[in-house]
Length: 298
Length: 308
Image (cartoon, rainbow over all chains, first blue to last red; front, top):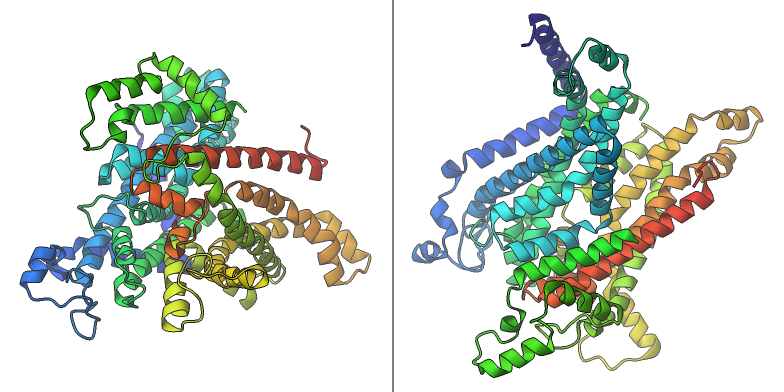
């Protein structure tokens, strides 16, 4: 049962954070750019016919092969006559979705492990930290490759693989923050008033950790997106979905570079670059807000 | 050490889960008499309990027997060893260059904080850090090997080249340029950022104020007092990164057809050549573990404040 006072305070904090965010130029630029791409992904059906992704359809339309943008459509065609623009627009959906979903998984696992580890302490903490360290030592991409090769190529497997390989750094950060918070007086006060574990976690720990988790999440999305791109490029992506990474893979494998078919591989990579930058800018701004020491000094 | 044991266990069981029938994979689609299959099964020890198989695996691994590659039918060990020099050359050069250049850029950015130099360095490195490294490679390849044919498109020497000695070396340099450039650009951001943060931390310390009070010039203060103390995290980072040297260039090697471990991995994925992947994974993990250990030791040695 949250009191009205607590809710008022929460609303005030949110407003304060938003105002601080608004005053940061890099944050707003990042947010604006991201909004554009989210809009692009959501309005995909309006912007490009999804049938254009089907090579049989493309052929039946009489599309030329390897056509540069001057000859066909906004972005030309690829090796089997499909519209590159359609791939770009529809690919944004997959790339964004996988990036976000994988990050959600990463943050969820990482936060749960971090909070439990930090709060409970003792042997459970030691054991969990061992596990975390082990994951951190294993080179991340080979592990992802091994898992993806074994699990097979599907969107959900990729999400799972990224989530499972990325959670350790989140766990470490969250745990450190939980330890800091745990030492503060109000936790002891709550305990002396008879509060039990889960209550303390929910009411005291979580609110103080959630800012850090949010900033970390925003910075984790770029990693997820780039990992999905690399995995798709290496051939581990879902064959039936058209992420930007997959577009790059097809371009490479089919000799787009030798032909100088820049319209084929430039847009997808550019899309990734811009989206990743947007998330990075937003994440850095959130970090500065959560940790004021970082901003004006740097 | 314990970690390595975990890696071995993990590696073994993971692949066993997938390879329900390893013998079957060897003879994909071909008709082989059942008797041959049974004989092979015994020969490989596959009719023994799983734990015994695991012992065989460990023993074989330490003897350097990592199995036979599906794709090339050569021992995995040989294939891997063949790829090591190329990868070490490429990633080693790139790691050193990106560390040096990145550190220098980080120093400039911190010392001239909030000037246009700082902003351009920070933004530039962030830009390169945000793109897929292999995509950057693709762009450079098209720009400087296709559009302006300045550099070769792939490989480590020109195909069919009989050159030796200096000529061969120059040819190799010619081929390594673009992939090395790609990796260097992609990774110098990390160094620049860390050096910058570290130096900014150090710049607030008291001993710098003392140095300036003594009347030392700016450049002297920077070179003899600030930078050496700020280098510590960078050194640790470099040591750790060398561990990732072997696995660092998988996609970039694929783009440039650079015949190293990365390309071997990329090719193995397309199989999937499970024994190769297993062996490569083992090697990559071992490298990281070793270098992390070295990094810890180095850090303890360099920073007297750290107690073991």
